[in-house]
Length: 156
Image (tube, rainbow, N blue to C red):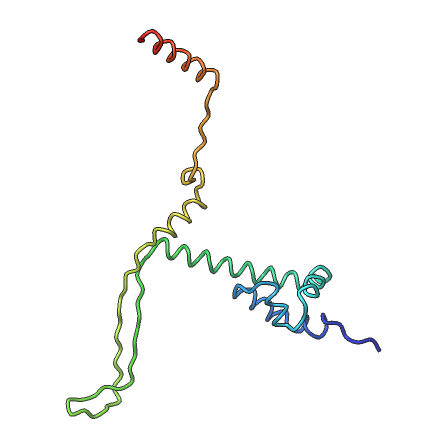
């Protein structure tokens, strides 16, 4: 009976975990190390088995969606509410009671300029690109230069 392959022993049983690990931002090299296999083995199995390629792609896509959402939230800003619950309160004599105390805090998160600029450059690159193209008609420029030089020569 042939020895089982790394696909059967290390990769296939961990496909869901591979997706979760990729979603955390880990590289293929780190995933291979986590699985206890070589990077080359992972890549070869990725080519042979669609399930592995799909698991890695799904994890990456989910990570990208999370990052996009986080960037959007940073760019827009807004308000967050934080609830703190305490299950006891001291009375005036210092005795603990079984009352519950809930505190809510509303915090403003201002838009972050870097996130705004990055988002706008990607969402509307025609209006928000760093460089603008300039079209120059060389013949018109050459004629203008000749006219300028003639004027300068006549002034002297």
